[in-house]
Amino acid sequence: MSTPSPVEPIEERLRTALDARARLIDAHDLSPYRPPTGPAWGRRRVRRVVSAVAVTVAAAAAVAFLLLSGSPERPRPAPPARDPSTSPPATSVPSTHGSPTSEPSPTSPPETPPSTSTATQR
Image 1 (cartoon, helix red, strand yellow):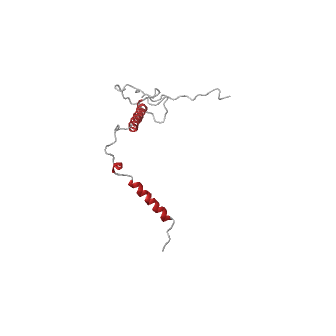
Image 2 (tube, one colour):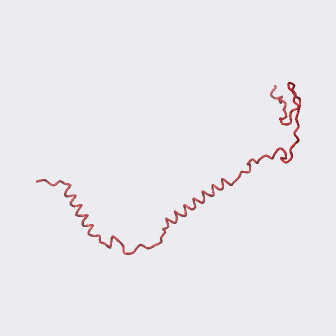
Image 3 (cartoon, rainbow, N blue to C red):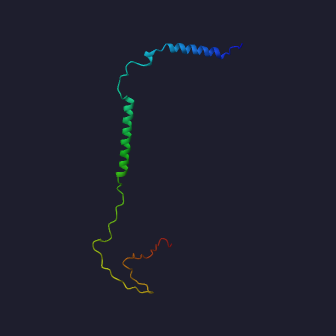
């Protein structure tokens, strides 16, 4: 014969207690005969939807503000140097090879003489 272990009486007591508890529940407790009443949308769900819409609108407004706002210091395009509808007549300038010319060409910028400061010569 085998001696019962201390686990068997505890297990048997748990089974008896669970069986007694299960007998207290009937079909009426398992399924109510009518559905619950109340608003279809709870306050939490409405708050979540309103919050999501508000966040979306705020993000769209921030993006629109950043894209559409121009700073007053924004550089403007420079106007053309001459009127594009009139062009100066093309002239050919004879070039002299080997001798420097004293007059600058019309397309090159004028040369500026090097400035000497009296404060740096002390």
